[in-house]
Length: 545
Image (cartoon, rainbow, N blue to C red):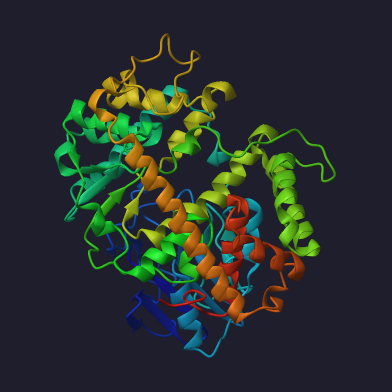
């Protein structure tokens, strides 16, 4: 993905097309804003007749700007707000970008210097991923999901927020929404299957979501344009089912090609190791986006499929904060021991208020958790983390209509992934007759479970695979220990982090993370503390190798 930024002050306008080219485009005459849409293939479609944001339906767009005859402009996120837009609007200066580094650089050139904040890392500890609108700088916020900003020539801003219930609910019939969802997903695959990519590598697992992507590929007859990649040990259900799918549908293996999408250096490998154990979840805050040598390779994933069913739960209002998100708040309380009490209470209060406001806007109480997931967690997980760790990773299940179709169903059917199965039946019915690695079959949706995959020769070297897993875990623990030891050598007092983290509790976690029997939760918390330190100190990581 290319990066774009618009910067405006009383006297200057900059259009930044990428991190190496800055174009001065005038003072306050028409044309100060660019017309166009940033799309996934890295191009900027510049046209006076840019389509509406919701007309693109997630074909990789993540920033739209339209210049209007009066010299003003509209700037929008993608329809689901999954690709964050960073906004600065202070001191008679307005700046918006999908890359926080570009935004900071533009401000520096105008002698505006931002102070780093580690609030977002506190949320990584208690929620595992995204915050509400934390960006790593107090003065910079995220444009709200589905929102649009109108900016006049003299930089007066008007924020138009999306109607919250419209993200989940529709008055249209389920079947009509399902057909539209299928069309959106097919459009996503079609838009990229014809692009100028050297390799198109698609995740293939034993689960639902990657198989729904496969259904779209097979429906379009584009099988031969893709190679398919599966991770896991040889005796894992994912590998067994994926291998069966390869044989059944004649799918090409990506073996030997996947390295083109993997880290190109030990440093990048280390970054990803830390990320996998829950550390630098928002890696572009710390190491920036990878400019991969083989940037003409494309990878498809099955992300966002969970938006069609269920993720974060809700409970009826109750508890101390009387919020429909009480179950999420309770989980945050259990994980907040390493935070300062004032920070933990503020987090919980803000999440509780989000739930209350969501219900006031028309979201049903039992859906408030899913709404939070859509508006906060996915934006960080896919828009920030994936953009940083896998620049050419795209998720074709991006479909606003699929979400609305899911919430047109009774909750039990939605949670059992009725939309996913119905999409598969529409696009490639044969795929529903093959079992899944997970327990996806439900008597609510099917008259009988699919026949089991014959394992046969697919299960090989079980002992060898077990050894590999143990070795991988040992290597990960050794890496975490090395990181923690370097951290301790740099800052034994931990006062640097005291704005968010409790100093004494932080010391305990760091000591525990060096132990031989560290829990996954402690290991993850230690790495998130590490990420906060690296961000605050402007380090690529707490050490270089």
